[in-house]
Image 1 (cartoon, rainbow, N blue to C red):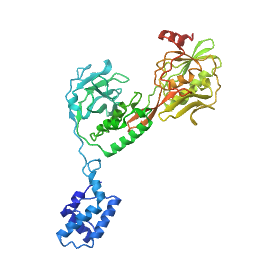
Image 2 (cartoon, rainbow, N blue to C red):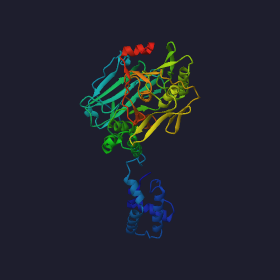
Image 3 (cartoon, one colour):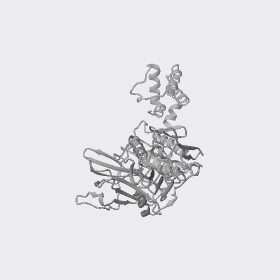
Image 4 (tube, rainbow, N blue to C red):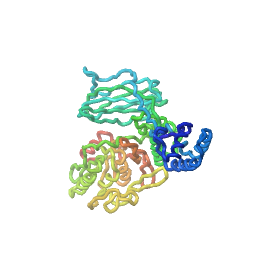
Length: 498
């Protein structure tokens, strides 16, 4: 909305506007710049002009008095609009995009090639920036590679006096323009911390990169729409976080909100949310790129004959939704082999994934009934059960499959290890005490995450609950009945001998 109250209350513009409105029925373009009115403002102007329509505007003094008195009384909506000018990106005068300026640094360290580029195949490339140069502003760094190169990581780390990172760096944004791949990252640098380190890390494959400048901006404004988005996300985080009652939310908000003042070409919300969750107890939450396509590699369950009628089922982490049905079918095909009379279920290399798909895959072994539960900060419990070819969370079907025989038997053994994490540990909680377990303790990621969308590129995985057994006891990590060293566990997996 364009704000014009100051001009309207100046005597020349006010007299010109009122006289032309009363005598000619419409304002003269030369007297007043174009205005856009809300409904409430139209009503206020209508009342004002109706009153002034019967006034003799022959004297300058009378017109000034009438205009100022009635304008102040009737045009409050315009006053409120003017009072808020500068707090929104839609003000009358568009803000100028802040200029990014190059920042001096300690010099890049890494494997530099003769042409000035850096080879990430031998490790990272990094440098340091004096914190007092960039404190209270935004810092960004970028690099380029050929369009066919693998993505690489651009990270900005801020460390405290003890060398601990203040917040995790945001995932890198890479885009291809023509024959060049651009990867960049940016971060707000607050008062906390002592050291600012910028680094490039290789991704899935080696890559040669050309470094761009390190730039900073201490200009910018806080946009009202960004503040509103931040407040909405803060409300969700505060409601869902499983240790919410331990957090000083006013202090956490105050620290994170400092980063909302940003250049126009930066969305500060991911950084603000990263700063917010970094102040929360526990460290299971994280921000991830939600706009990247899923990986193409799909690993499905497999079965290996060990000896006699004993078989091993290797159950990996679950794939993306598109392959979930194939994952369940493959596990069921293994478990229902007529020649298999006993099973060793290998969970030692299961990174997790969809907990309901994992339970569906093992349904022929686990059988119907409740198996474990999730609890949240409000004291609510959500039981995971298997019933009539479906995995259910409370009363809702989460995954369904075609009927298969129930093959549960006492000859089943589950192998655990630190490679069993997250939803794999939900399975481990369910089988501990019902089946024999061997191996090593699990990863200790026995929490439940809620995904919150930050913007089109980033999402937040927030810890919203805990995994518990059917008695409601939280299980931080699952320790097997029989603990084995690495060599003994390897022998069990290869030969099935316990």
